[in-house]
Image 1: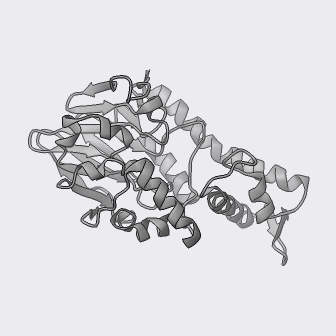
Image 2: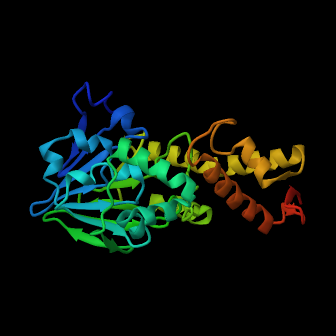
Image 3: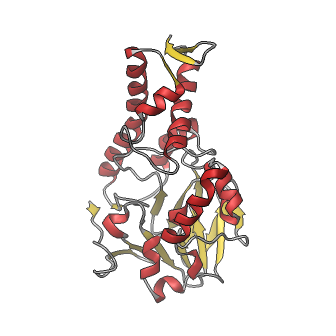
Length: 309
């Protein structure tokens, strides 16, 4: 089944579901960006949280008692509650560690220009209570945290970010899949450290994790039916091929430069604008073009014009 989260948390009580020592608190609109879904784990010795979305600011004492934050990856919407936990130990995969430790590290991970950086920082401070954590510690693939009668295990599944991980709570069998979120938007790999190749590999590996429950950061919420989870994962994965076919169709209409392809948009609706949209589209389209060039399905001339191979 898919569990539906609450309406705006400022008006209604936050809905939750419990799996043994694991609790999932649903963000607004089932954790749709800019919110997210909060996972808390009550070990007999340590209280832990996975990421800290906007909803974490409205949970109260149960969240504020968190002693350990294990982050599946670093983006602004996953850091929105860190300011409430100044004494908690924060752990981040080593490949995302610079992004959580400083604003410079985050801007570098995004691939944002200096001209954009000040406007983005203002937005993050306003909407996500942004505050870096220079005290954060790095972890690697396979890292484990013993909380007492339950443990967390990290599976490095990059693509969305270089350090993106799926976090499994054992013995409850609850997997936090983070921003492998199975939304209709499809996979996002538009940061400087993102990788289309790695995302493909991570999506193929995800079903191998020994989970009974799957929790997404955004939109979908909680899955307790494996068949349903796998169907939605297949549809999410298919977005990669759909985007590839969209690019090929654009080039079939006429040869185009990268800039012209960006104007048509691959991720967002045509004409959609935002602080990082053009850069994200440029990186996303470039990654698909690199694959197509390597396969000989697309060619590029000396003027930077792409055409079908």
